[in-house]
Amino acid sequence: MSTKKFMYLNRKAPYGTVYALESLEVVLIAAAFEQDVSLVFIDDGVYQIVDGQNTDGIGMKNFSKAYHALGDYDINQLYVSAESLTERGLSVDDLMPLVYEDEDDDWAEKPSIKVVSNVEISKIMSEQDVCLSF
Amino acid sequence: MKISIQINEGPYQHQASDTAYQFAKAAIAKGHEIFRVFFYHDGVDNASRFTVPPQDDRHIVNNWADLGIKNADGNEVELVVCVAAALRRGMLDASEAGKNGIDSNNIHPAFRISGLGQLIEAGIQSDRLVVFGD
Figure (cartoon, rainbow over the protein chains, first blue to last red):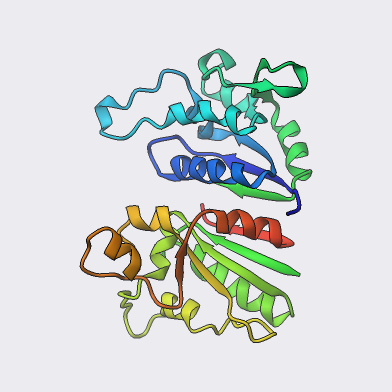
């Protein structure tokens, strides 16, 4: 099967709507297809990977732990909009420390998250074969 | 060109399904092939055979099912409903109803339930994947 560049664009907060959860379900399935996968977190989508999520008070499943599994599935290109973080008073330190093990570098643990400008995101987006927007 | 479509919103509530249907018909009229239509998120509700709109309104489910959108080669357009999204929204075919001990089923026979892999495969196999939704 041919390899294409797939980008998953996450734009919504994690619990107000089901888009974030069901986007993550697609990404985890997609991992089995051995495509070139990248994720973007932009607008309220940056809240999906904020550290220390606690859903005890809202009766919903806290699915944020599943993002830690992405590295194990070779999904390690996570682009976060710098503008979206700043607009919300957040920085990279507020995000979960998502990492992967680089097999080309003696399995060294490396951060999966890259904070980039929206201009850079649009450039990366233009290089994709398939963009799925959630 | 080989095109696949993803529909992320329910019928009547949102224009996504209507617009996708018009797009599919127009694409086929121009000689393109619609490889697969994948219904995700609330888009799964487009497959309910229990849908009864007022008589003077369009019937969105039957529009899809009637295959006014047959491809030029006479092959029917594949209408695929995501199983995970369908089950959590009470959309079941006979097989899933049986597995889950539920006494009825509501997926229109023109649609079939399948997994998210069908969406990824559509992205790989098609020249374009067009997403309709918020």
